[in-house]
Image (tube, rainbow, N blue to C red; front, top):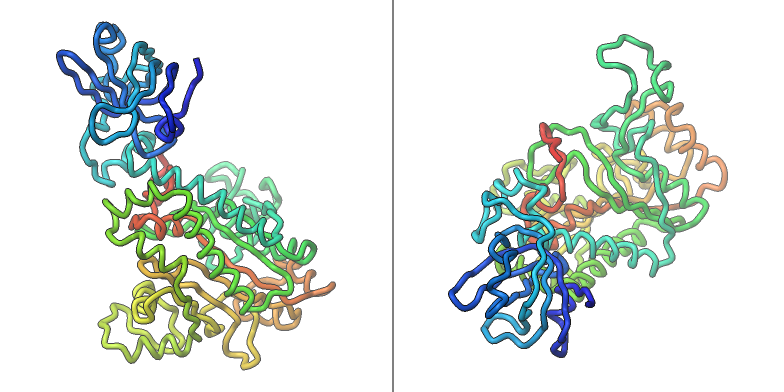
Length: 453
């Protein structure tokens, strides 16, 4: 007997005489003449209703098929006699793969996000979190599709690194030295300090100087003791680097990527997105449509701050020329201009060493794509390709040339203008779903004092 996915059965155009499906019982409704099992296998949002009547009511397995039980069901697919579903499975066989104990925590009611975070190993079985995990998978494919269509090569950069790309010091140390042992760093595994990467950018730049267009898509880590809804210690980053791209090319690529990914989601994940539109953020689909087809405003940093300073908004952090934009500033700019905004040409004092110094020597060729509700979604820049200026920037920020000798080498032999950016994959999923907490779009979030699962 053929085994089917529930997604395929619900999309069937005809009745099927011999069907077998496997999944988990979402609900069980018992009557004198009929029992209904709602079964979900994770392939789609909707459940398949299995109907047991007549002799099938006497199946011993049916008595034990509690909510959460893993089951296999056999029968025939036919048009549903009830409302709310097109098809149902008239069942004549039931097999239990694994019983669920009576205290199964996911009952037929709405559970709070706080409660579900405590049982992250079970929450993908709920409608909301199942939809989020399907979206993660679909959008990961979409990322690769976008870059392949633009002739970018996928490269893998190190997870263990000896450099701190952002220069902020918030790096997890990697060591094999026993705890409390007072030993020189030369006795450690690598013979020097090592940490988990905060970005694959620097290594991607090296690859771009050979392959022209590359991108990385992998895990990154920040040892920031932050418990905000926007930060996690482990998250995934999408980081393209392209040779012979200036800042304007870079902004165009970033804006095109957002449009492409949103378009992909609306075309391929609409059922799951509709769930979030109904229960998480009213008007989500309308907001996403504007991201797909609306204008992206470009605004120099100086003009953006002027707009903030002239507004009547009571900001918690007062804006001033030279300040780093806060989340409230970013969201206000999007609201004021009625859509996404790309802010560019930032003061050099608030940006990392690798960003290209502008002719005025006070700003760098940096850009951030800001989107409604989320704020900063993408941050990037044209990179500094001139050796003397790059050395000067390292010195300004107290960084050692010896630690970046390989990065400087690329500027010695065939240096070329190049640009890139970083897009936090998890933050993009927050944008896509309307979910407000990054912990809820990551299967097993890593945050301060949280290392379960």
